[in-house]
Amino acid sequence: MKRSNKQVPGSVESAKFYQSQYRGSTAEEYLIARGLGEGEEKFLPGYVGDSVMVGHEKYRNHLVLPYLRPAGGPHLVATIRFRCIRDECVKDPSGTYFFLSGQKEQHDSHGKYQSLPGDHPRLYNTEALIVSSPYIALSEGEFSSWAVELDGIPSVSTQGVSAWKDHFDRAFAGYEKVFLLGDGDEAGQKMNEKLASRLPNAVPVLIPDGEDPDSYRRIHGAGSIRQLLGLV
Image 1 (spheres, rainbow, N blue to C red):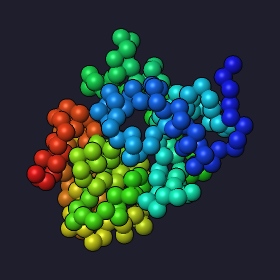
Image 2 (image 1 turned 180 degrees about the vertical axis):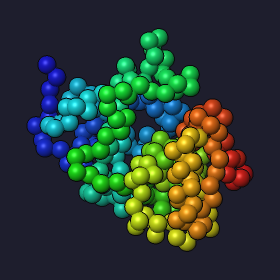
Image 3 (image 1 turned 135 degrees about the horizontal axis):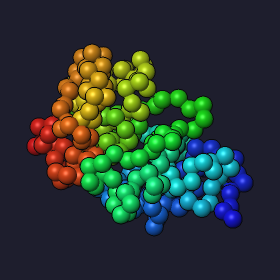
């Protein structure tokens, strides 16, 4: 029988608990395959393995993405989100990850991402907002932030254009450029259009059809996002 931890989960406790299960897990394998493995020390991912905190049973076999506060300390983790990486959802019958062959993952009966009950939309990787830089990138989804940051560009992401809140606008005032890196699909185009209408310093960037910053860097190599943004 799979055991559960009896502690009622809070964000900090949960993040630490699941981070301890990350090494050697399918979550580590998944991120390495996506070309994002080197970001683990910065973003502190976790994995919901056999040992599960009370109330998190439905997240078993999910990757854990903590939302870290720049100030750190005992309140380092603002919240966590769960990302499904179950084999039946992310791999084809041969055991190959769908994304490696340009196919979409098959999360048919559930959302790809899940937030804690009662949580509200947040910006991810807010540490990027306190980096001294004339520019910042804004993308859709946590993995996109990882990819852009790995190319040395401060990057924040949203949980989708519908999750954008009015007060987020103020976080991007003062930059010379806010690069908008919506995915190469209709939703990404809508994100770029919406945020360009809200942020006067926005610079929409065209991502090739069917790609996102994460896949773009994986396909074209380290440094490719810097080249795409003209930062070379």
